[in-house]
Length: 592
Image 1 (cartoon, one colour):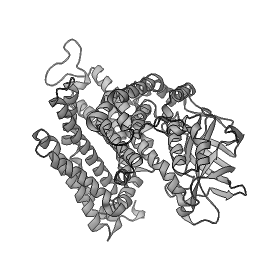
Image 2: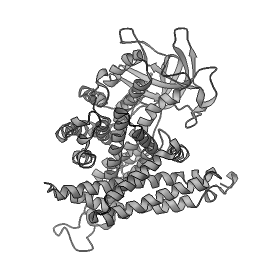
Image 3: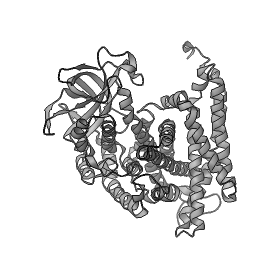
Image 4: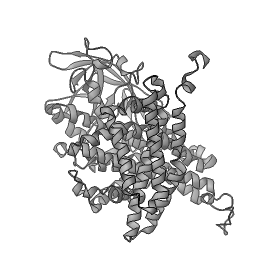
């Protein structure tokens, strides 16, 4: 059975050596001293490795079962969910006013990585609840907040998001679910939603569904969509769950992965719902949840790569196959361990350099979110908005690829279910699809985000890279291995943006045909920036006489690998972008 150990030391490095969180002026960051964050992460590491990780395989094998309208979760999930609730982990970064602990978002993300790495399907139950609570917090009335948030923060009640219908996924303007106004101010919700994660289960006393629907007589298309709170049980005046609402689970989807999460077909039969936010402004309210979810899903690319990598390393060190071509390394055994072979090293270095770069990128982005929310920093908010499709699309594509590479280390055993490696690949696959398929993320990046606020935010990113390069240009220890590769990659990104500006207006397909490459090009530059910054932090630690020089030397070596072996792909992405739309769009539909 696969194992998982929380990477506390690496998280501490990112939080303190790289991001220097306790020195930040963001409210609440002054409390994030190393001893405090270490204590939180160590405790989270215990529950994830000892409680959640052993249930990952159980959830995959048993799945969820629908019986007479009731969903039974896998063995051990209820007890684990109770333990997570009792530990206060579900409200770590939610407001104290509603029972949360009020920690910065960056801590929620760090802990969330552990939960998802240990058991992605399980962590989605509280993860979706967090997103639904955030939407109510941002757009709900005081009465709605008081009614729902205390129970949702504690996960006594869980939450969902309901967007997709059988005939519409990305194009939500086509939805048919309707909301008919009632005299008491409520609405009757009727329609069917599909692919609803955690849509039905018995682990909580109530489930608060956030449902997109159209009010009759409203504007056509997406402009006529509103968002509604639809509880599984109507909430009594005293705050307790009352009568069953007109919402039921019609079926559980048979999926490739995340078997431990109940992905449901939800039927709404004149269910009572309550408007969240303004009429016909449902997408604005839902995007609060969706943007948070997209960052969380981007993190899932990292988390499954991390879990798969840990097990691949163990296998590569234990499995004896062949001899090192430079000389025997295990003279007392019949063969040397796999890890001596260059191709296995390349494979593991691909994984390690991606994972550590992605972790830095996610936590760095989380700091931007804290700056936006806690400091009212509009520039930070704009930068995160720009990068959200990159986080979601690039990290999940690359993360999935890394789970395949980890599987490859095992050879034929990686294909056998007994070893558990296929689960990481199967679970990671969904992250490229849900919360907006990655192709849509790329279109959003190029079609909307680049030009947002007159291109202010992408220019700010370029300036961020340029400033770092200039401030460190005299550092010879950084120049050849880190600064020069980052500068070249950044120039590729700027050249791609210039191509879109010069050719996208006369033919939009010139931009859209290159959008996926642009998303990946951007992602590699982001990780290149993270690695350059981590290299600087590592050199400083070594210069200051760290007690653990091996950790920092390893970090530098891993970073050099990324800059030399992974980052140069930006030139390939640029060449593809410069080839324009003709190579992509020339065939007629009938020629396929």
